[in-house]
Length: 424
Image (cartoon, rainbow, N blue to C red):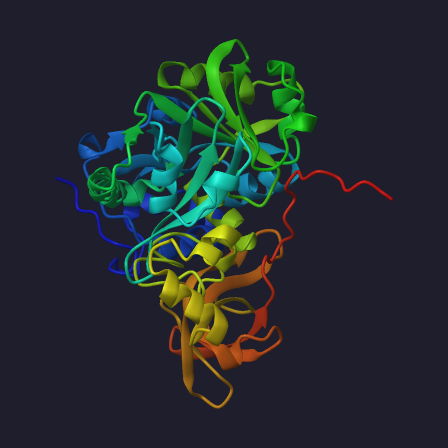
């Protein structure tokens, strides 16, 4: 069986399978994947493969082990080119490794609220939100997208690396719910693939292939529609890059057909992008990577994710560890997630952070050179006294302490497609 190590247990050097032509762009490619630390030489025959595996190989994808899957980390043009093309045009990410599932039954909303901090009851139909599954101590089991559909089920997308523990947690929650008379089921959707089309040219590429007016499909809205002749696709306006984009849940046996059609769209130049670019894009957008920036020991308040807890859920105190979490919101946590800018050698996960007096105040959880900003960016946790933007810090990189500065997140402004406010 392949060996899969957690993000904090991996060695600090990249293996040969991640050379990826990095000589042309060593910093961005190498450092971004130091922080994920999920790679060892593995026999790909033992790894799960998405429906697009052969498609990736045929298009020059460099396949690496990631959370038990063989996934493309980059293609021939490299991480930086893919990253910048997402910011300027459009790229396709294969995110079929993520766990797509549905909650069915008359008490599906109750079960969804037992599992997450989302106020599903008061969500509008065909609307989604980022939410959290918490353990009894307030730690984050996983960050998920929860969507309330108009088709009598709740659609949930969770991280590939958390799939087993999420399913185990859900099974226990369902058993407890049954004892309370709550009737609902949780079903993975293995016959569906998931493609993310991200970038400012997304609408230009997708609109000719759907009947739905995409100007009406705003950020975090969703709908089931035919996409370029492929029926029963769920299109959700979201993504994890900070750019406008969609995630398309498509029947697995037609995923290659859809990817090929999007890549060859005449409306804009669309490129394939791998895990490397997805990671640098999400870091520029100030978004968390599970296993690095958040985990079972991280609470929503210190992670600056308290906003995911619905207003009614706070009032009712009916989510896991509600008393603990709400108390932290009032008293403030001992540490908090912040953004950090620096020059010189880039920092990466587990880099120690010091204040100007030389006292250790925290640790970096994600870091890499920013292709958009042409400087180094990082996220990490520091003591509450050192969280103000502009605070000067020192990052211990390769035995030397490099100057850094606390910065507001996101590093690069989000370009989500949101409704324009009407002028009064």
